Length: 315
Figure (cartoon, rainbow, N blue to C red):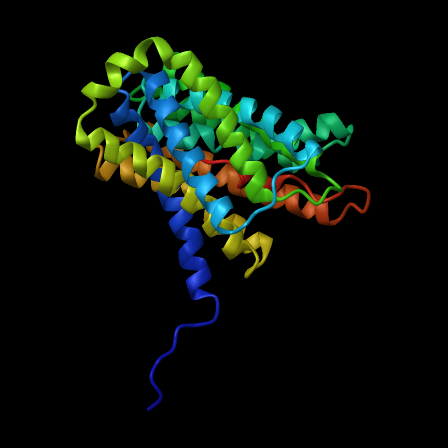
Protein backbone atom coordinates (compact mmCIF):
# COMPACT_ATOMS: atom_id res chain seq x y z
CA UNK A 1 0.00 0.00 0.00
CA UNK A 2 1.38 3.39 -1.01
CA UNK A 3 1.97 5.79 1.89
CA UNK A 4 -0.29 8.81 1.99
CA UNK A 5 1.33 11.95 0.65
CA UNK A 6 0.28 15.50 1.36
CA UNK A 7 -1.86 16.82 -1.46
CA UNK A 8 -0.28 19.51 -3.63
CA UNK A 9 -0.82 22.93 -2.13
CA UNK A 10 -1.37 21.76 1.44
CA UNK A 11 1.71 23.60 2.69
CA UNK A 12 0.53 26.77 0.94
CA UNK A 13 -2.92 26.48 2.51
CA UNK A 14 -1.41 25.96 5.96
CA UNK A 15 0.82 29.02 5.57
CA UNK A 16 -2.14 31.20 4.55
CA UNK A 17 -4.19 29.87 7.46
CA UNK A 18 -1.24 30.71 9.70
CA UNK A 19 -1.31 34.29 8.46
CA UNK A 20 -5.04 34.52 9.20
CA UNK A 21 -4.46 32.99 12.65
CA UNK A 22 -1.76 35.43 13.73
CA UNK A 23 -3.78 38.38 12.44
CA UNK A 24 -6.86 37.12 14.25
CA UNK A 25 -4.90 36.71 17.48
CA UNK A 26 -3.34 40.17 17.24
CA UNK A 27 -6.42 41.90 18.69
CA UNK A 28 -6.26 40.03 21.99
CA UNK A 29 -2.48 40.54 22.22
CA UNK A 30 -2.84 44.27 21.52
CA UNK A 31 -5.63 44.54 24.09
CA UNK A 32 -3.43 42.90 26.76
CA UNK A 33 -0.53 45.20 25.90
CA UNK A 34 -2.63 48.33 26.42
CA UNK A 35 -2.97 47.25 30.06
CA UNK A 36 0.81 47.26 30.45
CA UNK A 37 1.69 50.51 28.64
CA UNK A 38 0.08 53.55 27.01
CA UNK A 39 -1.31 52.89 23.55
CA UNK A 40 1.13 55.21 21.76
CA UNK A 41 4.09 53.53 23.48
CA UNK A 42 2.82 50.11 22.38
CA UNK A 43 2.43 51.34 18.81
CA UNK A 44 5.83 53.03 18.70
CA UNK A 45 7.68 49.97 19.98
CA UNK A 46 5.76 47.64 17.66
CA UNK A 47 6.66 49.79 14.68
CA UNK A 48 10.30 50.18 15.65
CA UNK A 49 10.77 46.41 16.02
CA UNK A 50 8.96 45.82 12.70
CA UNK A 51 11.03 48.45 10.88
CA UNK A 52 14.33 47.04 12.16
CA UNK A 53 13.31 43.47 11.25
CA UNK A 54 12.13 44.45 7.78
CA UNK A 55 15.32 46.45 7.26
CA UNK A 56 17.37 43.36 8.07
CA UNK A 57 15.25 41.25 5.71
CA UNK A 58 15.74 43.81 2.93
CA UNK A 59 19.48 43.81 3.52
CA UNK A 60 19.64 40.01 3.65
CA UNK A 61 17.69 39.66 0.41
CA UNK A 62 19.60 42.55 -1.20
CA UNK A 63 16.37 44.36 -1.91
CA UNK A 64 17.14 47.50 -3.97
CA UNK A 65 16.58 50.87 -2.34
CA UNK A 66 13.17 52.36 -3.14
CA UNK A 67 13.03 54.75 -6.05
CA UNK A 68 11.56 58.22 -5.66
CA UNK A 69 7.98 57.19 -6.66
CA UNK A 70 8.13 54.19 -4.27
CA UNK A 71 9.50 56.41 -1.51
CA UNK A 72 6.74 58.99 -1.98
CA UNK A 73 4.06 56.29 -2.04
CA UNK A 74 5.61 54.59 0.98
CA UNK A 75 5.56 57.79 3.04
CA UNK A 76 1.88 58.45 2.31
CA UNK A 77 0.90 54.82 2.86
CA UNK A 78 3.00 54.70 6.03
CA UNK A 79 1.00 57.58 7.47
CA UNK A 80 -2.36 56.04 6.57
CA UNK A 81 -1.27 52.64 7.89
CA UNK A 82 -0.12 54.25 11.15
CA UNK A 83 -3.54 55.91 11.41
CA UNK A 84 -5.24 52.54 10.96
CA UNK A 85 -3.19 50.82 13.66
CA UNK A 86 -3.59 53.77 16.02
CA UNK A 87 -7.38 53.62 15.69
CA UNK A 88 -7.32 49.82 16.00
CA UNK A 89 -5.18 49.79 19.13
CA UNK A 90 -7.10 52.55 20.87
CA UNK A 91 -10.32 50.84 19.76
CA UNK A 92 -9.43 47.37 21.01
CA UNK A 93 -8.57 48.86 24.40
CA UNK A 94 -12.22 49.96 24.67
CA UNK A 95 -13.97 46.87 23.33
CA UNK A 96 -13.48 43.10 23.19
CA UNK A 97 -10.92 41.43 20.94
CA UNK A 98 -13.82 39.48 19.41
CA UNK A 99 -15.72 42.64 18.46
CA UNK A 100 -12.54 44.27 17.16
CA UNK A 101 -11.68 41.38 14.83
CA UNK A 102 -15.19 41.21 13.44
CA UNK A 103 -15.77 44.94 12.97
CA UNK A 104 -12.45 45.47 11.20
CA UNK A 105 -13.44 42.75 8.72
CA UNK A 106 -15.94 45.23 7.29
CA UNK A 107 -12.97 46.56 5.31
CA UNK A 108 -13.72 43.76 2.84
CA UNK A 109 -17.03 45.39 1.85
CA UNK A 110 -16.02 49.01 2.46
CA UNK A 111 -13.01 48.92 0.14
CA UNK A 112 -14.91 48.02 -3.07
CA UNK A 113 -17.54 50.64 -2.17
CA UNK A 114 -14.90 53.35 -1.83
CA UNK A 115 -13.03 52.16 -4.90
CA UNK A 116 -16.28 52.23 -6.87
CA UNK A 117 -16.92 55.83 -5.82
CA UNK A 118 -13.42 56.87 -6.90
CA UNK A 119 -13.77 55.05 -10.22
CA UNK A 120 -17.41 56.16 -10.65
CA UNK A 121 -18.35 52.54 -11.13
CA UNK A 122 -21.53 51.33 -9.42
CA UNK A 123 -21.41 47.99 -7.65
CA UNK A 124 -24.26 45.51 -8.34
CA UNK A 125 -27.32 45.45 -6.06
CA UNK A 126 -26.38 42.17 -4.28
CA UNK A 127 -23.21 43.86 -3.01
CA UNK A 128 -25.25 46.59 -1.30
CA UNK A 129 -27.44 43.86 0.18
CA UNK A 130 -24.30 42.24 1.63
CA UNK A 131 -23.20 45.61 3.03
CA UNK A 132 -26.58 46.16 4.69
CA UNK A 133 -26.44 42.65 6.16
CA UNK A 134 -22.96 43.36 7.55
CA UNK A 135 -24.20 46.56 9.19
CA UNK A 136 -27.08 44.64 10.81
CA UNK A 137 -24.56 42.06 12.00
CA UNK A 138 -22.37 44.72 13.62
CA UNK A 139 -25.43 46.24 15.33
CA UNK A 140 -26.30 42.85 16.83
CA UNK A 141 -22.67 42.14 17.71
CA UNK A 142 -22.19 45.30 19.78
CA UNK A 143 -25.63 45.11 21.35
CA UNK A 144 -24.69 42.32 23.77
CA UNK A 145 -27.79 41.18 25.63
CA UNK A 146 -29.97 43.89 24.11
CA UNK A 147 -29.90 46.78 21.68
CA UNK A 148 -27.76 49.69 22.83
CA UNK A 149 -25.49 52.33 21.38
CA UNK A 150 -22.03 51.06 20.36
CA UNK A 151 -19.23 51.73 22.86
CA UNK A 152 -16.43 54.15 22.04
CA UNK A 153 -14.10 51.24 21.32
CA UNK A 154 -16.54 49.80 18.79
CA UNK A 155 -16.81 53.24 17.17
CA UNK A 156 -13.04 53.51 16.85
CA UNK A 157 -12.84 50.04 15.30
CA UNK A 158 -15.47 51.08 12.75
CA UNK A 159 -13.44 54.22 12.01
CA UNK A 160 -10.35 51.99 11.64
CA UNK A 161 -12.22 49.86 9.07
CA UNK A 162 -13.08 53.00 7.07
CA UNK A 163 -9.50 54.34 7.19
CA UNK A 164 -8.14 50.91 6.28
CA UNK A 165 -10.44 50.89 3.25
CA UNK A 166 -8.95 54.26 2.26
CA UNK A 167 -5.45 52.85 2.82
CA UNK A 168 -6.16 49.79 0.66
CA UNK A 169 -7.64 51.88 -2.12
CA UNK A 170 -4.60 54.15 -2.02
CA UNK A 171 -2.30 51.14 -2.39
CA UNK A 172 -4.20 50.13 -5.51
CA UNK A 173 -4.13 53.62 -6.99
CA UNK A 174 -0.49 54.40 -6.13
CA UNK A 175 0.92 51.09 -7.36
CA UNK A 176 -1.31 50.51 -10.42
CA UNK A 177 0.78 50.10 -13.55
CA UNK A 178 4.06 50.39 -11.64
CA UNK A 179 6.63 47.71 -10.88
CA UNK A 180 6.89 48.54 -7.20
CA UNK A 181 8.94 46.31 -4.93
CA UNK A 182 6.48 45.15 -2.27
CA UNK A 183 9.12 44.42 0.36
CA UNK A 184 10.79 47.82 -0.03
CA UNK A 185 7.40 49.57 0.01
CA UNK A 186 6.40 47.78 3.21
CA UNK A 187 9.74 48.59 4.85
CA UNK A 188 9.28 52.29 4.03
CA UNK A 189 5.79 52.21 5.56
CA UNK A 190 7.15 50.62 8.72
CA UNK A 191 9.94 53.18 8.97
CA UNK A 192 7.52 56.08 8.53
CA UNK A 193 5.21 54.65 11.19
CA UNK A 194 8.14 54.11 13.55
CA UNK A 195 9.27 57.74 13.23
CA UNK A 196 5.77 59.25 13.46
CA UNK A 197 4.59 57.18 16.42
CA UNK A 198 7.88 57.41 18.29
CA UNK A 199 7.59 61.19 18.05
CA UNK A 200 4.00 61.03 19.31
CA UNK A 201 4.93 58.70 22.17
CA UNK A 202 8.19 60.48 23.09
CA UNK A 203 6.88 62.09 26.32
CA UNK A 204 5.93 58.67 27.74
CA UNK A 205 8.63 56.42 26.24
CA UNK A 206 11.32 57.25 28.77
CA UNK A 207 9.19 56.25 31.77
CA UNK A 208 7.12 53.44 30.21
CA UNK A 209 9.84 51.38 28.52
CA UNK A 210 11.90 50.54 31.66
CA UNK A 211 8.71 49.42 33.43
CA UNK A 212 7.59 47.00 30.74
CA UNK A 213 7.57 43.39 32.00
CA UNK A 214 9.22 40.62 30.01
CA UNK A 215 5.79 39.29 29.00
CA UNK A 216 4.94 42.63 27.37
CA UNK A 217 8.18 42.59 25.38
CA UNK A 218 7.34 39.06 24.21
CA UNK A 219 3.91 40.27 23.05
CA UNK A 220 5.48 43.23 21.24
CA UNK A 221 7.92 40.94 19.45
CA UNK A 222 4.99 38.67 18.50
CA UNK A 223 3.02 41.58 17.03
CA UNK A 224 6.04 42.88 15.14
CA UNK A 225 7.60 39.66 13.89
CA UNK A 226 4.61 37.32 13.56
CA UNK A 227 1.83 39.74 12.61
CA UNK A 228 3.94 41.97 10.38
CA UNK A 229 7.19 40.44 9.12
CA UNK A 230 6.13 36.77 9.02
CA UNK A 231 2.65 37.60 7.70
CA UNK A 232 4.04 39.74 4.88
CA UNK A 233 6.74 37.29 3.80
CA UNK A 234 4.46 34.25 4.18
CA UNK A 235 1.61 35.68 2.17
CA UNK A 236 3.96 36.88 -0.58
CA UNK A 237 5.41 33.35 -0.81
CA UNK A 238 2.02 31.63 -0.66
CA UNK A 239 0.00 33.85 -3.01
CA UNK A 240 2.43 33.07 -5.81
CA UNK A 241 1.67 29.36 -5.35
CA UNK A 242 -2.11 29.41 -5.33
CA UNK A 243 -5.03 31.28 -6.86
CA UNK A 244 -5.98 34.76 -5.61
CA UNK A 245 -9.49 33.47 -4.83
CA UNK A 246 -8.20 30.64 -2.66
CA UNK A 247 -5.71 32.93 -0.90
CA UNK A 248 -8.45 35.48 -0.24
CA UNK A 249 -10.75 32.78 1.14
CA UNK A 250 -8.15 31.37 3.52
CA UNK A 251 -6.88 34.73 4.78
CA UNK A 252 -10.49 35.88 5.03
CA UNK A 253 -10.88 33.54 8.02
CA UNK A 254 -9.14 36.20 10.14
CA UNK A 255 -12.35 37.29 11.96
CA UNK A 256 -13.18 33.66 12.73
CA UNK A 257 -9.80 33.24 14.42
CA UNK A 258 -10.33 36.53 16.28
CA UNK A 259 -13.55 35.13 17.76
CA UNK A 260 -11.98 31.76 18.66
CA UNK A 261 -8.94 33.36 20.29
CA UNK A 262 -10.98 35.98 22.13
CA UNK A 263 -13.45 33.44 23.54
CA UNK A 264 -11.04 30.57 24.27
CA UNK A 265 -7.94 32.44 25.47
CA UNK A 266 -9.31 35.85 26.40
CA UNK A 267 -12.27 34.59 28.39
CA UNK A 268 -14.64 36.77 26.38
CA UNK A 269 -18.30 35.86 26.11
CA UNK A 270 -20.63 35.89 23.15
CA UNK A 271 -24.33 36.18 23.93
CA UNK A 272 -26.79 34.54 21.57
CA UNK A 273 -27.65 37.92 19.99
CA UNK A 274 -23.96 38.79 19.57
CA UNK A 275 -23.22 35.35 18.13
CA UNK A 276 -25.95 35.83 15.51
CA UNK A 277 -24.38 39.20 14.69
CA UNK A 278 -20.94 37.60 14.35
CA UNK A 279 -22.30 35.01 11.91
CA UNK A 280 -24.00 37.74 9.88
CA UNK A 281 -20.79 39.81 9.69
CA UNK A 282 -18.69 36.86 8.50
CA UNK A 283 -21.35 35.65 6.03
CA UNK A 284 -21.92 39.14 4.64
CA UNK A 285 -18.21 39.85 4.13
CA UNK A 286 -17.70 36.52 2.37
CA UNK A 287 -20.74 37.05 0.15
CA UNK A 288 -19.79 40.65 -0.58
CA UNK A 289 -16.29 39.55 -1.50
CA UNK A 290 -17.72 36.93 -3.85
CA UNK A 291 -20.06 39.45 -5.53
CA UNK A 292 -17.22 41.94 -5.95
CA UNK A 293 -14.98 39.29 -7.51
CA UNK A 294 -17.63 38.16 -9.99
CA UNK A 295 -18.39 41.79 -10.87
CA UNK A 296 -14.69 42.55 -11.38
CA UNK A 297 -14.02 39.51 -13.55
CA UNK A 298 -17.06 40.29 -15.66
CA UNK A 299 -16.01 43.91 -16.28
CA UNK A 300 -13.30 44.45 -18.86
CA UNK A 301 -12.97 48.12 -18.00
CA UNK A 302 -11.97 47.59 -14.40
CA UNK A 303 -8.32 46.67 -13.65
CA UNK A 304 -7.27 44.29 -10.93
CA UNK A 305 -8.54 45.67 -7.61
CA UNK A 306 -6.59 46.29 -4.47
CA UNK A 307 -7.73 43.07 -2.81
CA UNK A 308 -4.26 41.52 -2.91
CA UNK A 309 -2.70 44.84 -1.95
CA UNK A 310 -4.81 44.86 1.21
CA UNK A 311 -2.71 41.99 2.45
CA UNK A 312 0.42 44.15 2.32
CA UNK A 313 -0.80 45.74 5.54
CA UNK A 314 -0.56 44.14 8.92
CA UNK A 315 -3.36 43.54 11.47
